[in-house]
Length: 158
Image 1 (spheres, helix red, strand yellow):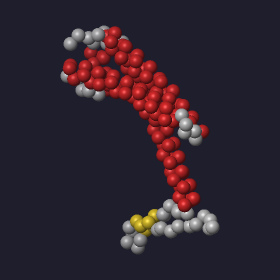
Image 2: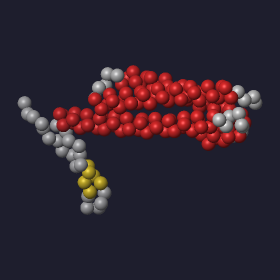
Image 3: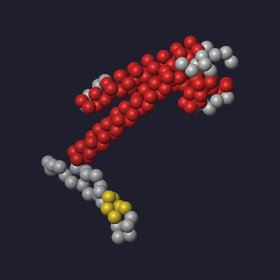
Image 4: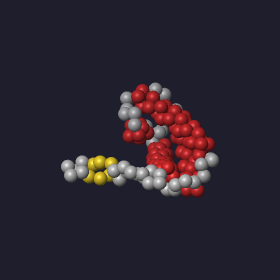
């Protein structure tokens, strides 16, 4: 297999640019969630999906390279691949930086996901209150099993 270091360098640079854009989108998404502005979120999600597709394509290319040379098709395999050749060794620092930035994106995405989940819980709770329903508390029976106690309260009567 012929090794094109310039192609590898270009792949890492493209992934770095995509991750930088993804981080910006995650920051914008968090700002929108904090402000409870939903208008821009669908466009942000579309842009995130496009960037993730681009990153997935690069990951598939790396997997093909690693499969061809018989290394594990994961991040450690790629790191080992970069260490094996003196021509690719300088790319290792860029690769480590890329992995670190991607891990930051994952953390940011987790935070945004928790914010979305909490907003959904709050909205559902408010809707249930308006409907006159309250969440059923969990109670324990004499046997120690969990049961749901259900009742409803009317917020207002006509």
